[in-house]
Image 1 (cartoon, rainbow, N blue to C red):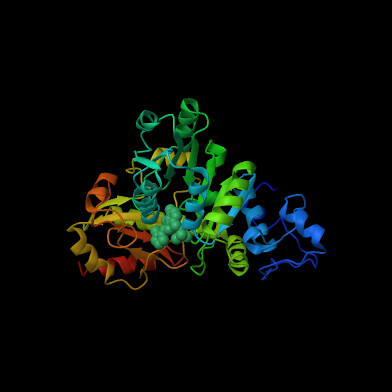
Image 2 (cartoon, rainbow, N blue to C red):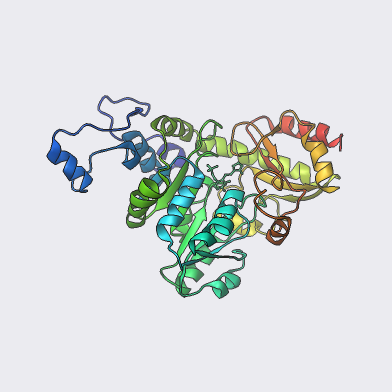
Length: 393
Ligand code: LCS
Protein backbone atom coordinates (compact mmCIF):
# COMPACT_ATOMS: atom_id res chain seq x y z
CA UNK A 1 0.00 0.00 0.00
CA UNK A 2 1.00 3.65 -0.34
CA UNK A 3 1.52 6.40 2.20
CA UNK A 4 -1.84 8.11 1.86
CA UNK A 5 -5.44 6.96 2.29
CA UNK A 6 -6.70 8.61 -0.91
CA UNK A 7 -4.07 6.72 -2.94
CA UNK A 8 -4.69 3.42 -1.16
CA UNK A 9 -8.41 3.42 -1.99
CA UNK A 10 -7.57 3.73 -5.69
CA UNK A 11 -4.45 1.62 -6.20
CA UNK A 12 -2.69 -1.45 -4.92
CA UNK A 13 -5.51 -3.99 -5.12
CA UNK A 14 -7.15 -4.77 -8.43
CA UNK A 15 -8.67 -8.21 -7.85
CA UNK A 16 -9.36 -10.79 -10.53
CA UNK A 17 -9.31 -8.63 -13.68
CA UNK A 18 -8.39 -10.50 -16.87
CA UNK A 19 -9.08 -7.57 -19.25
CA UNK A 20 -7.52 -4.74 -17.25
CA UNK A 21 -10.80 -2.88 -16.65
CA UNK A 22 -10.21 0.28 -14.60
CA UNK A 23 -13.56 0.05 -12.82
CA UNK A 24 -14.38 -3.11 -10.86
CA UNK A 25 -16.02 -5.78 -13.05
CA UNK A 26 -19.42 -6.88 -11.73
CA UNK A 27 -19.54 -10.68 -11.55
CA UNK A 28 -23.34 -10.85 -11.58
CA UNK A 29 -23.54 -14.60 -11.20
CA UNK A 30 -24.95 -16.84 -8.52
CA UNK A 31 -22.81 -19.86 -9.36
CA UNK A 32 -19.44 -20.79 -10.93
CA UNK A 33 -18.79 -23.59 -13.45
CA UNK A 34 -16.29 -26.30 -12.45
CA UNK A 35 -13.92 -27.88 -15.01
CA UNK A 36 -14.76 -31.34 -13.68
CA UNK A 37 -16.22 -33.15 -10.68
CA UNK A 38 -12.80 -33.41 -9.03
CA UNK A 39 -12.33 -29.65 -9.10
CA UNK A 40 -15.79 -29.04 -7.58
CA UNK A 41 -14.98 -31.46 -4.78
CA UNK A 42 -11.59 -29.85 -4.15
CA UNK A 43 -13.20 -26.40 -3.88
CA UNK A 44 -15.90 -27.54 -1.46
CA UNK A 45 -13.22 -29.40 0.49
CA UNK A 46 -11.21 -26.18 0.88
CA UNK A 47 -8.20 -27.52 -1.07
CA UNK A 48 -8.74 -25.22 -4.09
CA UNK A 49 -9.62 -21.58 -3.42
CA UNK A 50 -11.62 -21.03 -6.64
CA UNK A 51 -15.20 -19.69 -6.44
CA UNK A 52 -18.23 -22.01 -6.05
CA UNK A 53 -21.41 -20.09 -5.29
CA UNK A 54 -21.84 -16.36 -4.57
CA UNK A 55 -23.05 -16.84 -0.97
CA UNK A 56 -19.66 -18.49 -0.36
CA UNK A 57 -17.64 -15.91 -2.31
CA UNK A 58 -17.59 -13.84 -5.52
CA UNK A 59 -14.78 -11.90 -7.24
CA UNK A 60 -16.53 -8.49 -6.97
CA UNK A 61 -17.21 -9.05 -3.26
CA UNK A 62 -13.65 -10.31 -2.81
CA UNK A 63 -12.20 -7.12 -4.29
CA UNK A 64 -14.25 -5.01 -1.86
CA UNK A 65 -13.18 -7.24 1.05
CA UNK A 66 -9.50 -6.87 0.11
CA UNK A 67 -9.78 -3.09 -0.16
CA UNK A 68 -11.52 -2.70 3.20
CA UNK A 69 -9.10 -5.10 4.93
CA UNK A 70 -6.21 -2.99 3.61
CA UNK A 71 -7.81 0.29 4.71
CA UNK A 72 -8.50 -1.08 8.23
CA UNK A 73 -4.96 -2.55 8.32
CA UNK A 74 -6.57 -5.96 8.90
CA UNK A 75 -5.86 -9.48 7.72
CA UNK A 76 -9.37 -10.12 6.40
CA UNK A 77 -12.81 -8.62 5.78
CA UNK A 78 -16.16 -10.34 5.20
CA UNK A 79 -18.92 -8.31 3.51
CA UNK A 80 -22.63 -8.73 4.28
CA UNK A 81 -25.88 -7.43 2.82
CA UNK A 82 -26.43 -5.07 5.80
CA UNK A 83 -24.72 -3.76 8.90
CA UNK A 84 -27.16 -5.81 10.99
CA UNK A 85 -26.22 -8.88 8.93
CA UNK A 86 -22.56 -8.28 9.80
CA UNK A 87 -23.31 -7.69 13.50
CA UNK A 88 -25.67 -10.63 14.01
CA UNK A 89 -23.58 -12.93 11.78
CA UNK A 90 -20.43 -12.08 13.74
CA UNK A 91 -21.89 -12.31 17.23
CA UNK A 92 -23.88 -15.48 16.57
CA UNK A 93 -20.78 -17.14 15.12
CA UNK A 94 -18.64 -16.31 18.14
CA UNK A 95 -21.16 -16.66 21.00
CA UNK A 96 -22.97 -19.70 22.38
CA UNK A 97 -25.63 -20.35 24.97
CA UNK A 98 -24.10 -19.61 28.41
CA UNK A 99 -21.70 -16.93 27.14
CA UNK A 100 -21.67 -13.36 28.43
CA UNK A 101 -20.85 -10.07 26.75
CA UNK A 102 -20.46 -6.49 27.98
CA UNK A 103 -21.93 -3.84 25.70
CA UNK A 104 -22.15 -0.07 25.96
CA UNK A 105 -25.78 1.06 26.46
CA UNK A 106 -25.51 3.59 23.61
CA UNK A 107 -25.93 1.55 20.44
CA UNK A 108 -27.80 1.78 17.15
CA UNK A 109 -31.41 0.79 18.03
CA UNK A 110 -31.45 -2.55 16.17
CA UNK A 111 -28.09 -3.61 17.66
CA UNK A 112 -29.56 -2.80 21.07
CA UNK A 113 -32.71 -4.79 20.24
CA UNK A 114 -30.62 -7.79 19.13
CA UNK A 115 -28.69 -7.76 22.39
CA UNK A 116 -31.47 -6.89 24.83
CA UNK A 117 -34.39 -8.82 23.28
CA UNK A 118 -33.02 -11.63 21.11
CA UNK A 119 -29.81 -12.78 22.83
CA UNK A 120 -31.55 -13.70 26.12
CA UNK A 121 -33.81 -16.07 24.12
CA UNK A 122 -30.66 -17.94 23.09
CA UNK A 123 -29.11 -17.96 26.57
CA UNK A 124 -26.52 -15.26 25.78
CA UNK A 125 -26.23 -12.83 28.69
CA UNK A 126 -25.58 -9.14 28.03
CA UNK A 127 -24.61 -6.53 30.62
CA UNK A 128 -24.91 -2.94 29.41
CA UNK A 129 -22.01 -1.05 30.99
CA UNK A 130 -20.61 2.39 30.22
CA UNK A 131 -17.53 1.59 28.09
CA UNK A 132 -16.10 5.07 28.72
CA UNK A 133 -15.56 3.84 32.29
CA UNK A 134 -12.77 1.24 32.05
CA UNK A 135 -13.03 0.26 35.72
CA UNK A 136 -16.78 -0.43 35.34
CA UNK A 137 -16.09 -2.66 32.32
CA UNK A 138 -13.36 -4.57 34.17
CA UNK A 139 -15.70 -5.05 37.12
CA UNK A 140 -18.35 -6.54 34.80
CA UNK A 141 -16.01 -9.11 33.18
CA UNK A 142 -16.72 -12.71 34.21
CA UNK A 143 -14.91 -15.95 33.29
CA UNK A 144 -17.52 -16.51 30.51
CA UNK A 145 -17.26 -12.95 29.07
CA UNK A 146 -16.40 -13.45 25.41
CA UNK A 147 -16.63 -9.90 24.09
CA UNK A 148 -16.79 -6.18 24.85
CA UNK A 149 -18.91 -4.35 22.26
CA UNK A 150 -19.23 -0.61 21.63
CA UNK A 151 -19.62 2.09 18.99
CA UNK A 152 -17.41 5.19 18.87
CA UNK A 153 -18.66 7.80 18.13
CA UNK A 154 -21.86 6.12 19.35
CA UNK A 155 -25.28 6.38 17.74
CA UNK A 156 -27.03 8.69 18.64
CA UNK A 157 -25.29 10.50 21.54
CA UNK A 158 -21.84 10.80 19.88
CA UNK A 159 -20.26 9.37 23.01
CA UNK A 160 -16.54 8.53 22.60
CA UNK A 161 -14.88 5.37 23.93
CA UNK A 162 -11.09 5.21 24.40
CA UNK A 163 -10.31 2.24 22.13
CA UNK A 164 -6.62 1.91 23.06
CA UNK A 165 -7.11 2.33 26.82
CA UNK A 166 -10.07 -0.03 27.06
CA UNK A 167 -8.55 -2.69 24.75
CA UNK A 168 -5.31 -2.81 26.76
CA UNK A 169 -7.15 -3.06 30.09
CA UNK A 170 -9.58 -5.75 28.86
CA UNK A 171 -6.84 -7.88 27.29
CA UNK A 172 -4.76 -7.64 30.47
CA UNK A 173 -7.74 -8.79 32.53
CA UNK A 174 -8.84 -11.55 30.12
CA UNK A 175 -6.62 -12.15 27.10
CA UNK A 176 -9.20 -14.09 25.03
CA UNK A 177 -12.01 -11.54 25.49
CA UNK A 178 -12.60 -9.89 22.09
CA UNK A 179 -12.89 -6.11 21.87
CA UNK A 180 -15.38 -5.33 19.08
CA UNK A 181 -15.81 -1.82 17.71
CA UNK A 182 -18.58 -0.58 15.44
CA UNK A 183 -16.56 1.91 13.37
CA UNK A 184 -19.49 3.07 11.18
CA UNK A 185 -19.40 6.73 12.30
CA UNK A 186 -15.62 7.13 12.00
CA UNK A 187 -14.77 4.95 8.96
CA UNK A 188 -11.19 3.67 8.54
CA UNK A 189 -10.23 7.14 7.28
CA UNK A 190 -10.79 8.74 10.70
CA UNK A 191 -10.04 5.79 13.03
CA UNK A 192 -8.42 2.36 12.69
CA UNK A 193 -9.55 0.45 15.79
CA UNK A 194 -7.34 -2.59 15.10
CA UNK A 195 -4.23 -0.39 15.19
CA UNK A 196 -5.40 0.79 18.62
CA UNK A 197 -5.66 -2.75 19.99
CA UNK A 198 -9.24 -3.81 19.20
CA UNK A 199 -9.81 -7.34 17.83
CA UNK A 200 -12.71 -6.92 15.46
CA UNK A 201 -14.33 -4.04 13.55
CA UNK A 202 -17.91 -3.86 12.30
CA UNK A 203 -19.41 -1.48 9.77
CA UNK A 204 -22.70 -0.46 8.37
CA UNK A 205 -21.29 0.26 4.90
CA UNK A 206 -24.73 1.71 4.11
CA UNK A 207 -23.38 4.93 5.62
CA UNK A 208 -20.14 6.80 4.79
CA UNK A 209 -18.28 3.89 3.18
CA UNK A 210 -20.78 3.78 0.32
CA UNK A 211 -21.79 7.37 0.93
CA UNK A 212 -24.49 7.85 -1.69
CA UNK A 213 -27.62 6.55 0.03
CA UNK A 214 -28.27 3.84 -2.54
CA UNK A 215 -26.99 0.64 -0.92
CA UNK A 216 -27.52 -1.32 2.31
CA UNK A 217 -24.38 -3.27 3.29
CA UNK A 218 -22.21 -4.38 6.20
CA UNK A 219 -18.70 -5.57 6.98
CA UNK A 220 -16.77 -7.47 9.63
CA UNK A 221 -13.00 -7.00 9.74
CA UNK A 222 -10.28 -8.77 11.74
CA UNK A 223 -7.89 -11.73 11.88
CA UNK A 224 -7.93 -14.57 9.30
CA UNK A 225 -9.01 -17.34 11.67
CA UNK A 226 -11.99 -15.49 13.15
CA UNK A 227 -13.08 -14.06 9.79
CA UNK A 228 -12.92 -17.56 8.30
CA UNK A 229 -15.35 -18.76 10.97
CA UNK A 230 -17.62 -15.74 10.42
CA UNK A 231 -17.64 -16.37 6.66
CA UNK A 232 -18.16 -20.12 7.00
CA UNK A 233 -20.86 -19.99 9.69
CA UNK A 234 -22.30 -16.50 10.30
CA UNK A 235 -22.52 -15.54 6.63
CA UNK A 236 -22.92 -18.95 5.00
CA UNK A 237 -25.29 -20.71 7.43
CA UNK A 238 -26.74 -18.43 10.12
CA UNK A 239 -27.72 -15.26 8.26
CA UNK A 240 -27.11 -16.01 4.57
CA UNK A 241 -26.78 -12.23 4.45
CA UNK A 242 -24.82 -12.10 1.19
CA UNK A 243 -24.14 -8.77 -0.52
CA UNK A 244 -25.13 -8.50 -4.17
CA UNK A 245 -22.22 -8.06 -6.64
CA UNK A 246 -23.89 -4.95 -8.04
CA UNK A 247 -24.03 -3.37 -4.57
CA UNK A 248 -20.37 -4.30 -4.02
CA UNK A 249 -19.58 -2.44 -7.25
CA UNK A 250 -21.46 0.65 -6.03
CA UNK A 251 -19.54 0.57 -2.73
CA UNK A 252 -16.23 0.21 -4.59
CA UNK A 253 -17.21 3.28 -6.59
CA UNK A 254 -18.23 5.25 -3.48
CA UNK A 255 -15.04 4.26 -1.69
CA UNK A 256 -12.90 6.09 -4.26
CA UNK A 257 -13.95 9.46 -2.81
CA UNK A 258 -14.24 8.48 0.88
CA UNK A 259 -11.42 10.80 2.01
CA UNK A 260 -12.79 13.84 0.16
CA UNK A 261 -16.36 13.21 1.29
CA UNK A 262 -15.29 12.71 4.91
CA UNK A 263 -13.17 15.88 4.85
CA UNK A 264 -16.20 17.86 3.69
CA UNK A 265 -18.63 16.14 6.12
CA UNK A 266 -16.28 16.88 9.02
CA UNK A 267 -15.62 20.50 8.05
CA UNK A 268 -19.33 21.19 7.55
CA UNK A 269 -20.24 19.41 10.81
CA UNK A 270 -17.76 21.52 12.80
CA UNK A 271 -19.32 24.73 11.42
CA UNK A 272 -22.88 23.53 12.04
CA UNK A 273 -21.99 22.31 15.57
CA UNK A 274 -20.49 25.71 16.43
CA UNK A 275 -23.62 27.43 15.07
CA UNK A 276 -25.89 25.16 17.15
CA UNK A 277 -23.70 25.57 20.26
CA UNK A 278 -24.29 29.33 20.40
CA UNK A 279 -28.00 29.12 19.47
CA UNK A 280 -30.40 30.42 22.13
CA UNK A 281 -33.02 27.74 21.31
CA UNK A 282 -30.55 24.85 21.70
CA UNK A 283 -30.14 23.24 25.11
CA UNK A 284 -27.10 21.07 24.41
CA UNK A 285 -24.97 19.97 21.46
CA UNK A 286 -23.26 16.55 21.30
CA UNK A 287 -20.34 16.72 18.86
CA UNK A 288 -16.85 15.44 19.70
CA UNK A 289 -15.28 18.37 17.82
CA UNK A 290 -16.54 20.81 20.47
CA UNK A 291 -14.13 21.30 23.42
CA UNK A 292 -17.18 21.02 25.73
CA UNK A 293 -17.74 17.38 24.66
CA UNK A 294 -16.57 14.99 27.42
CA UNK A 295 -14.84 12.78 24.83
CA UNK A 296 -13.11 15.66 23.00
CA UNK A 297 -9.56 14.87 24.17
CA UNK A 298 -9.83 11.15 23.42
CA UNK A 299 -11.46 11.91 20.05
CA UNK A 300 -8.51 14.20 19.26
CA UNK A 301 -6.16 11.29 19.95
CA UNK A 302 -7.98 8.49 18.13
CA UNK A 303 -9.77 10.30 15.27
CA UNK A 304 -8.19 12.23 12.39
CA UNK A 305 -11.24 14.54 12.47
CA UNK A 306 -14.49 14.46 14.45
CA UNK A 307 -17.01 13.00 12.01
CA UNK A 308 -20.14 14.25 10.29
CA UNK A 309 -22.92 13.53 12.81
CA UNK A 310 -24.19 15.97 15.44
CA UNK A 311 -26.94 15.40 18.01
CA UNK A 312 -28.63 18.17 19.95
CA UNK A 313 -31.44 18.92 22.40
CA UNK A 314 -33.80 21.74 21.53
CA UNK A 315 -35.09 23.82 24.46
CA UNK A 316 -38.69 22.79 25.06
CA UNK A 317 -38.07 19.09 24.24
CA UNK A 318 -39.70 17.03 21.52
CA UNK A 319 -42.57 19.46 20.82
CA UNK A 320 -40.08 22.20 19.94
CA UNK A 321 -37.83 19.74 18.08
CA UNK A 322 -40.82 18.69 15.93
CA UNK A 323 -41.48 22.30 14.91
CA UNK A 324 -37.85 22.55 13.84
CA UNK A 325 -37.78 19.23 11.94
CA UNK A 326 -41.07 19.91 10.17
CA UNK A 327 -39.85 23.25 8.81
CA UNK A 328 -36.59 22.26 7.12
CA UNK A 329 -35.88 21.90 3.40
CA UNK A 330 -32.12 21.44 2.93
CA UNK A 331 -32.04 19.05 5.92
CA UNK A 332 -34.13 16.10 4.77
CA UNK A 333 -36.29 14.24 7.31
CA UNK A 334 -34.95 10.68 6.97
CA UNK A 335 -33.09 8.06 9.01
CA UNK A 336 -29.68 6.73 7.95
CA UNK A 337 -26.56 8.88 7.85
CA UNK A 338 -23.39 9.46 5.88
CA UNK A 339 -25.19 10.36 2.67
CA UNK A 340 -24.38 13.35 0.46
CA UNK A 341 -27.62 15.05 1.59
CA UNK A 342 -28.02 16.35 5.15
CA UNK A 343 -30.42 14.05 7.00
CA UNK A 344 -32.27 14.88 10.21
CA UNK A 345 -34.26 12.49 12.39
CA UNK A 346 -35.67 11.95 15.88
CA UNK A 347 -33.95 8.92 17.51
CA UNK A 348 -36.51 8.28 20.29
CA UNK A 349 -39.38 7.72 17.83
CA UNK A 350 -37.33 6.43 14.89
CA UNK A 351 -33.84 4.78 14.94
CA UNK A 352 -33.88 4.15 18.71
CA UNK A 353 -37.56 3.31 19.23
CA UNK A 354 -36.49 -0.20 20.39
CA UNK A 355 -35.34 1.47 23.64
CA UNK A 356 -37.94 2.10 26.33
CA UNK A 357 -38.06 5.63 27.77
CA UNK A 358 -36.24 4.35 30.89
CA UNK A 359 -33.58 2.63 28.79
CA UNK A 360 -32.98 5.82 26.80
CA UNK A 361 -32.63 7.78 30.03
CA UNK A 362 -30.22 5.19 31.44
CA UNK A 363 -28.18 5.38 28.23
CA UNK A 364 -28.06 9.17 28.59
CA UNK A 365 -30.01 10.47 25.62
CA UNK A 366 -33.23 12.40 25.89
CA UNK A 367 -36.62 11.85 24.24
CA UNK A 368 -36.22 15.26 22.57
CA UNK A 369 -32.80 14.54 21.05
CA UNK A 370 -32.45 15.36 17.34
CA UNK A 371 -29.75 13.78 15.17
CA UNK A 372 -28.26 15.54 12.18
CA UNK A 373 -26.06 13.79 9.60
CA UNK A 374 -24.34 16.78 8.03
CA UNK A 375 -24.11 16.41 4.27
CA UNK A 376 -22.02 17.80 1.46
CA UNK A 377 -24.07 20.93 0.76
CA UNK A 378 -22.49 24.32 1.43
CA UNK A 379 -22.39 24.67 5.25
CA UNK A 380 -24.00 28.10 5.08
CA UNK A 381 -27.04 26.68 3.25
CA UNK A 382 -27.45 24.08 6.02
CA UNK A 383 -27.13 26.78 8.70
CA UNK A 384 -29.58 29.09 6.90
CA UNK A 385 -32.08 26.21 6.65
CA UNK A 386 -31.74 25.50 10.40
CA UNK A 387 -32.09 29.22 11.17
CA UNK A 388 -35.38 29.37 9.23
CA UNK A 389 -36.54 26.20 11.02
CA UNK A 390 -35.68 27.62 14.45
CA UNK A 391 -37.72 30.73 13.64
CA UNK A 392 -40.82 28.45 13.70
CA UNK A 393 -39.96 26.97 17.11
N1 LCS B 1 -24.23 0.18 13.25
C1 LCS B 1 -24.49 1.50 13.33
C2 LCS B 1 -23.63 2.39 14.15
C3 LCS B 1 -25.59 2.02 12.63
O1 LCS B 1 -25.83 3.33 12.72
C4 LCS B 1 -26.41 1.14 11.88
C5 LCS B 1 -27.59 1.63 11.13
C6 LCS B 1 -26.09 -0.21 11.84
C7 LCS B 1 -24.99 -0.66 12.54
C8 LCS B 1 -26.91 -1.19 11.05
O2 LCS B 1 -26.59 -1.07 9.72
P1 LCS B 1 -27.60 -1.42 8.49
O3 LCS B 1 -28.08 -2.80 8.73
O4 LCS B 1 -28.69 -0.43 8.54
O5 LCS B 1 -26.69 -1.30 7.31
N2 LCS B 1 -28.02 2.93 11.49
C9 LCS B 1 -29.05 3.55 11.04
C10 LCS B 1 -29.45 4.82 11.49
O6 LCS B 1 -28.92 5.46 12.39
N3 LCS B 1 -30.50 5.23 10.80
O7 LCS B 1 -30.93 4.25 9.92
C11 LCS B 1 -30.03 3.12 10.02
